[in-house]
Each structure stands twice: as structure tokens, then as C-alpha cells.
Image 1 (tube, helix red, strand yellow):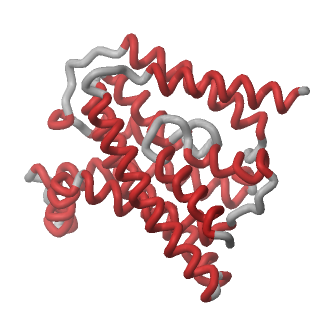
Image 2 (cartoon, rainbow, N blue to C red):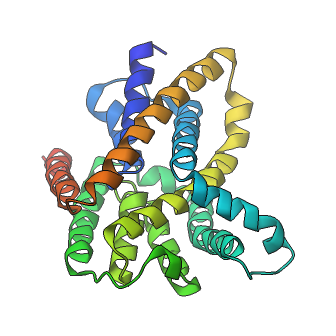
Amino acid sequence: MPLFHLLLIAIIQGLTEFLPISSSAHLILLPSLTGLEDQGQVIDVAVHIGTLFAVVLYFRRDVWLAASGVPRLLTGRIDTVGTKLAFLLAIGTIPVVLFGLMLKLTGLDDAMRSIAVIGWAMLGFGLVLYWSDQRGATHKTTEGWNLRDALVMGLWQALALIPGTSRSGATITGARALGYGREDAARLSMLMSIPTIIASGVLLGGEVVATADISAAKDGAIAAVFAFFAALLALSLMMRLLRAISFTPYVIYRVVLGLFLLWLAYT
């Protein structure tokens, strides 16, 4: 695959994975709107691995805290901050794993990869994000994250399997509706992405290993590195900007893109 194509895919994935504008939609739209060949699952998994390393590095303290709590959690004890965080992240991941398996087994995951579906999801969930961001209270913080909130955000995350919804957008919407401030909502959303990306990689890993060759592995490694740096940049910018602005700029982008896609789909 040409280096420019790999760079384009990696930058799109890296910039859109953590911004509430749907990375999966942009990756689906790239070949549909440009005529470029579909990058395939090897590259998809590779760029997700790149973004995984980026979020782990950015939130390394929280990741270390949760990881250090896993051994104690496996003994059935949830009596430390680390074990609680690890437990809640696991709970928040269950809905998306179950929903993802259902879509894959029924073939609905491929059926939803259309411009019309992406357009409606981009528009509809963008407006819902705006509503929750403007109306949501800010009386909760990350330290007060509980079982109910983790499950609710997990259900929102499962909805993001509809192309165009945005995983980060859905979980941030859920968190804002529950009363978390913008920075706390984004932080929880990013932490929830870690086990979700890992689960997605495991789900697709067998197929990728079976179909990958040396050339594909090389392309995947290049794409992963580019995606890592793009995702790290996007994360840093978003978390800093949230101290000064709302999610409205992302909503405007979603609405404009959604209307454009619907125009393409129905004309």
C-alpha cells in the first residue's frame, strides 16, 4: 500500500478515535468518497493498536492504577481505588462486547456500513451530544464513578457500534447526561476506550493473523506508528481545549457532515 495512503488512514484514525466525530465512519467513508482501495482489517487493527498506545501513554497514571488493581480484583476483593477502577472499566466494556458479537454473528455490522446510516447517526447523535452537553449538570467527578454509571455509559458505548455514532461521543454524551463535567466525562470516555480497543483487537485478531503476510504486517506497523502520534496530538488538544470551550465545534462538524452525507445518499 502506498505510504501516502497509509499516512492518510493513520491520521484519520488517530485524530478521530478520541474526538467525538466517529473514527469508524471516517474510515468507511475514505474509500467510498475518494475511490481509494479499502484498507482491510490488517490496517484497521494496526491503527487501533497505535491509538491504544497513545491513550495508555496519555492516561498512564490511571492505567497503572487500574492495572495494579487487577490481581486483587481477581481474588474477588474490590476494596481499593485501583480495584474499583478496574472493575468498573470491565463492567463498562461488557455491553459493547456482547452487542459487537451479536452484530458480527448476524452480519448486521456489514449491513450498516452505508452512507445513509452514517449520515443519520452523525446528525442524530451529534444533536444528542449537544443537548447533553448544554443541559448536563456538573456535580459528579471521576472519583465518584460508580457501578450504575459505568453500566449506563457502557450501554451508550454499545450504541457506538452503529457507524457514525462515535464511541467517544456516545460515552461523553452518557457521562454528561449523568452529571459529569466535560473534562471528567472525556477522561472516563478515554479510559473506557482501552479495554474496548483491546476487546476489538482480540475479536479481529484471529482473522488478521490468518490473512496477514509480511507486506501487510509492514504496512500495519507503519500505520500504527503514524496513528499513535496523531492520536496523542488529538488527545492533548481536546483535553486542553475542554478547559475553555464546549463540545459545540464537534457538534457543528457532525451536523454539517451528516447533512452532506444524507444529501449524497438520497440524491
